[in-house]
Length: 167
Image (cartoon, rainbow, N blue to C red; front, side, top):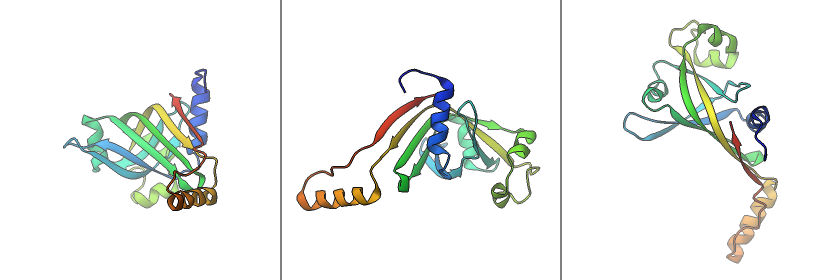
């Protein structure tokens, strides 16, 4: 997208990640090391913020106090779609919001329900996202990679679309 329009940028981000169930949520821990863990994005709101459930007992909850800059990566290899979202994480303790977003999948992880004092939210205020969206199919990609190995060349695969979404 050439002209910046926030709602269009958010819509593009939503369309890229809507079918990707899990993401890798990366923080910086107390020792200064990058740590990633699988998380489920519960919602991408109209501002482009990502919402996740966590526990006050989790390392994630503690990591974002000292180092709120985070990255959330989404990948759907079958569709050749990859999205990396950068932003600042915020700790949210809002029982009304926790209850409003509650769903059966969350119940599996937090069996005491939305009133459990340890159940909280993390909102990632997204600043930008990069995406890679390959149009070539898996069979074509595999064929081209095999051909490249046999011939000593690089694969002739359409790299697809790469872009940045400014939020």
